[in-house]
View 1 (cartoon, rainbow, N blue to C red):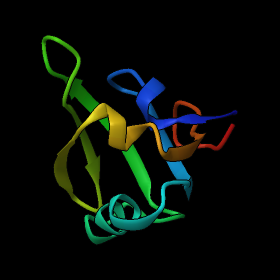
View 2 (view 1 turned 60 degrees about the vertical axis):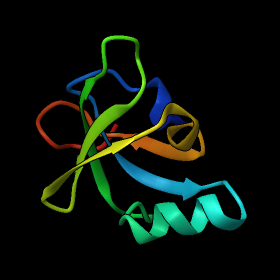
View 3 (view 1 turned 45 degrees about the vertical axis):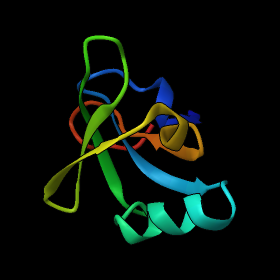
Length: 83
């Protein structure tokens, strides 16, 4: 199943399929390591929902929901197998 990183809930994991933004925001995401093929796990959300905290490439990263909505993901089933 394909959806944006913004729709993920804490504990959900997936693989980045595509970053659909353009210009500076896309470059910023790439600079932070959010590139196609990267596994991302949603860790938690702030009390009012923004920002969100994700884990990728062995570190935690906080991003805004507006940044998360440009990241298309492919879900990973529980136990590590792709859906």
